Amino acid sequence: EKGGYASFMLKEIAEQPKAVTDTLLGRIDGSGSLTLDEVRIPANVLREVDKVVIVACGTAFHAGLIAKYAIEHWTRIPCEVELASEFRYRDPILDQQTLVIAVSQSGETMDTLMALRHAREQGARVLAICNTNGSTIPRESDAVLYTHAGPEVAVASTKAFLTQLVACYLVALYLGQVRGTKWADEIRAVVRDLSSISGAVERVLGTMEPVRELARSLAGKDTVLFLGRHVGYPVALEGALKLKELAYMHAEGFAAGELKHGPIALIEDDVPVVVVVPSPRGRSVLRDKIVSNIQEIRARGARTIVVAEEGDEAVVPYADHLIRIPATPTLLQPLVATVPLQVFACELATARGNEVDQPRNLAKSVTVE
Ligand code: M6R
Image 1 (tube, helix red, strand yellow):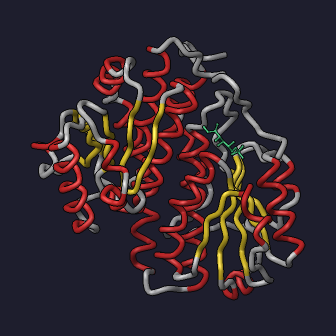
Image 2 (tube, rainbow, N blue to C red; image 1 turned 180 degrees about the vertical axis):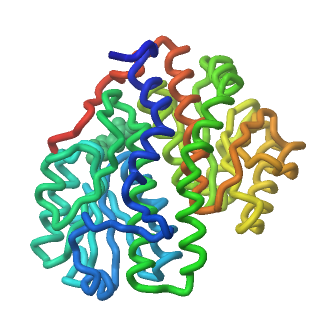
Image 3 (cartoon, rainbow, N blue to C red; image 1 turned 90 degrees about the horizontal axis):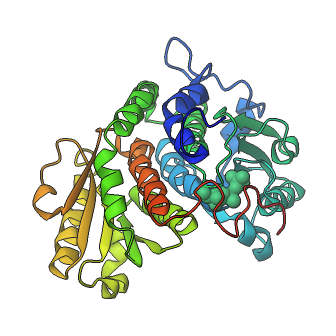
């Protein structure tokens, strides 16, 4: 069943290149246009959308945080992302022009379901991004985009996350295409880049031995911190969540720009800090700022574990450990940057003697509020 892997989690991590390919399958035509006919919300309705609200929990929420950057950039529609458990209790402002996107692997998460019911009662349209055919969340939504990742058995979400990201990018690009923004050329280029992303994920998976070794060497630590900026910030949150749920360690993700507003006080001798470095192309200002952050925390004793694009040499002098990822367009970087953090958490948990497929106290789908 595990196909020769020691755990379902390892198997599902390895399945990611195929999973992202399957999410794209049949959704891009020969001319590079998106054909999301299954999103049955008519184009004229999508053109009227004036706000997007994403609701989700856990890892799916992190996919939503990343989607916000893509949606706002490619469509210029304001986008909010909210934990499903918080959403309906604060009387959110919703109407017929609001597109609510409910992201859920299982399609059964009670908080997400209650959030979408609330949204529909207020007249909003709901699009589900879901991995489980025929589950409750897609059945109760106006439309669904299935992620086609295949069954995810391990409690920790891995391939579902990558495919949720791909589905979110598809929705963002599709909204951009339908509405015709000034980014038409960029949208076409990104569609091309998405088509080759599976190979990039495969390459990352082929270089994970040093990451596993590093993880094993940190098994005795109490704390691991994660820093990121822009789309790397939700990646940092996701890396920390994986480590909490699998290794039962204190792990926290921070926006690197917040360091000086508090978290830097946590830095002490030899505390491991994983830093996700933005692409030096596109957002070079952010890359430079994060390089200063790495210097600052290293000067205070942190052990820096730097996740950076191939060819980015500026980080080398400050990296105690360097994890290379292939160059991608800025917004797509989470698809490759998250993978080493999944492998890291899985290996560290195993080194601590934990059962990675069934972490303590957790269920695969949370069907109570
Ligand atoms: O099935 P869903 O995507 O709605 O589940 C949401 C969360 O419960 C889930 O992502 C959870 O955080 C994972 N265990 C994280 O690995």
